[in-house]
Image (cartoon, rainbow, N blue to C red; front, side, top):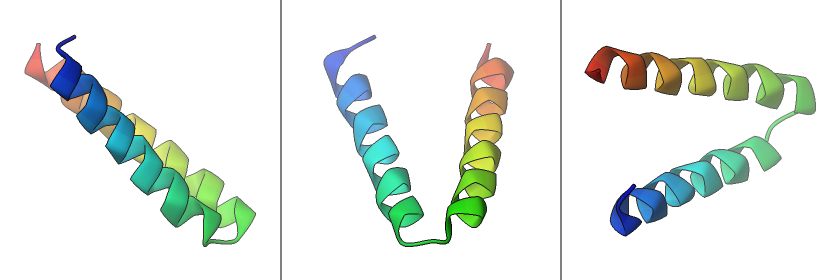
Length: 47
């Protein structure tokens, strides 16, 4: 994985975690699950 991709991905994660920290915990978990499944779907569709 090229370095800029890693950095971009890390930034995405930090953004997500930051927005999660401002939500109620259970809502955060749900949103995180949705986010992960969407990302995984995007990755598998690209292949």
